[in-house]
Amino acid sequence: MQVRRRGDVGPAVAEISSTLTALGLLSAPDGHGAVQHAVFDQAVEHAVRTFQQQRGLITDGVVGPATFRALRDATYHLGGRPLAYLVSAPMTGDDVFALQEKLLELGYDAGRADGTFGPQVELALRSFQRDYGLVIDGICGPGTIRALRQLAPKVRGGRPVLLREQERVRQAGPLLRGKRIVVDPGHGGPDRGAVVGATHEADLMWDLARRLEGQMAATGMEALLSRGEDSSPTDPERAAFANETGADLFLSLHVDANHSPLAEGVACFHYGTPNGTSTVGEALSGLIQRELSARTGLLDCRSHPRTWEPLRMTRCPAVRVEVGYLTNPGDLARLTNPGFRDLVAESILIAVKRLYLLGENDQPTGTFTFSDILRHELAKAE
Ligand SMILES: [Zn+2]
Image (tube, rainbow, N blue to C red; front, side):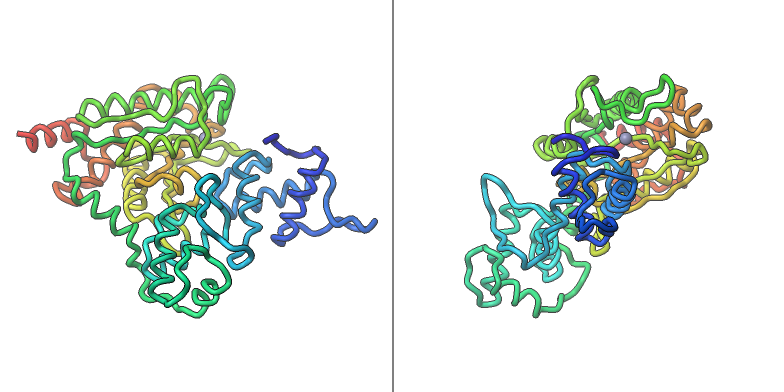
């Protein structure tokens, strides 16, 4: 799909603006009976940014593939069309997301709410239909919608998919040895990410990922990189890689940029919606955030839930780290120092170790070292 930005015209722009208008983010242009903005003007750009912010997308005011998909998905409301599992082209949309949330609230394991009607959603839907005496066809049509609307959620918090994640970490044991981690350096190839002077986010994150990979390998972990040095897979491809390799964790590495040089600091993101969050992802995100802000001196911009594609589509707990702003002179000076990038990698590794320790051998944030980890791994392996 062609990227649409300020100044563009044409049917795609009309479609974008009518969707934004339907979502209440854009008012129709004045006069002449026009119902849509035919030009991607400032008002459209502003509405795109607001939409991106609401959806946890990168707020660049430009409609690329991810924003276009999110816009299309946002036009669907539960009950507006029948939903079913289509093997060749799975249905996606906000209505599927709402259905998954409903089923999860009612205690049916519809998998992680990712807005995609896959086989697990069908199984959960069939169980629901059986339990409530409906026609068991795995199709979410008018009868099923009516039944779903009449039911109040049982108990919140007992989401099977999240409990399963926690159990997996507990069973995995405290050793890092043998754990498989997908390290995902942001951007790559023609996609340079944030660029300030000679510093490109794509190269910086590649370097950081290699350092982290090296440290992980030294502890006996299996670190897999989601991309090569010069390639740029899409977000769904990166998530699929983590799923296909059966990763235990997915760690995405980015830096941020802002039009203001004053914006600075480190933030972490995990999968979450207002109705439920990945408990393991949230725990890991908090651990990485704490270790990084304690060790690196970067400003603590906290850990936050987001529904970004790679966080949403990975089956394992996933965290995205935004380690500083390239547009901030202080952060930039730190990040261009290789020793600092080693420190960032070490902080992330220690946070991962803490996750698997589950509070055992606990030491205050910022005091655990790489050699402590090696010692612990060796002592336990004997
Ligand atoms: Zn980035």
